[in-house]
Image (cartoon, rainbow, N blue to C red; front, side, top):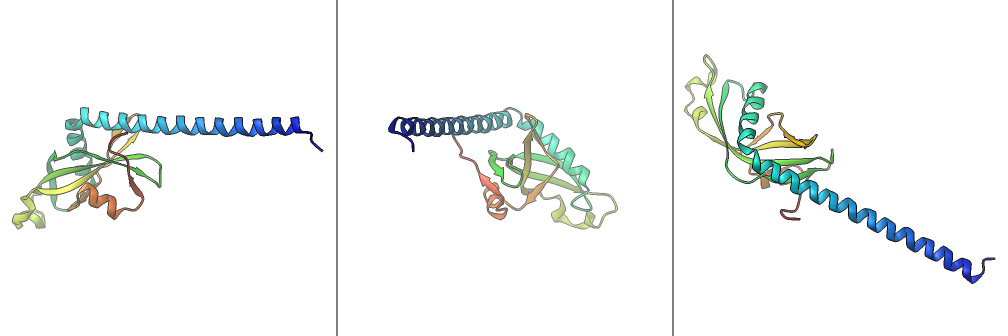
Length: 159
């Protein structure tokens, strides 16, 4: 049987472990908050370059069929979300996309094909930089996109 002083050592050890776990969790949360702010600032500083990057990547997909991507303009602030499937940070960015019909396509005689279209562009943050595969969600705002895809969880606007 343990005497009273041994219980003090056991209790003290448990307390130290609990405090250490809280400290590690606090540092981990602080690190994630700093990463989010870094992501947000990098996006603000380089958004003109991202318009070109999206235009090039999305144009290479060949979608929508019969249309060429000719313009992309960011129309608002990025909404940062966490993709719970990957754990990564994603920027949902409101954009206005301009198209021209490809020569000989079914879309040449469609007047609406030349109209700018609202959309949400999707950018991912990895390797210390923003990237896009040209993924765009048409006719959705960033908030509507968060609602439509349950794996996306909005990050706080300010940490």
